[in-house]
Length: 211
Image (cartoon, rainbow, N blue to C red; front, top):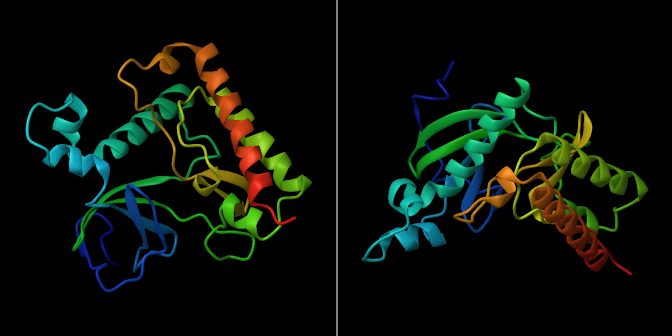
């Protein structure tokens, strides 16, 4: 059986499943339940590291992988609190070597039809935001609030609808970008920001949905 950790995985001849500002997502060629997130070399973090002069500590140390550092930190915080991951997060399988550079191996979330789980953006554009999905949105934000985790970029493209179990999963958006991380230490600040993010998300879903 292929070794998910030590073998170099060839992705350059594969078509990406998704592309974001910071990373490009591929299906693992040997493991159906694993996706590989490869950092985008043109991301703002890599550009920041390439600039001459003094750099912020996080840029100097983690270069273009700052988001991975922030995300992994929140995963560790979640496990430290409860001994396990909350149900709204995909599992992590570690780091792998690919012909496109390092990759973050994460759980592939499938939708009700067994295909890659649709994002809330896709559901909204297809006119599929109904009372059931809105109920799952309420449940997701309640779970995030209870978890104590710090989130960012809680937009419709970072949340997918899982089929088994029936839930919403946050695939991007953990961690805090600011230097003084008030929300890590202040529950009130964290919940206030989370409430704003929820209202913005609901407004975006209404905007994307067909008339």
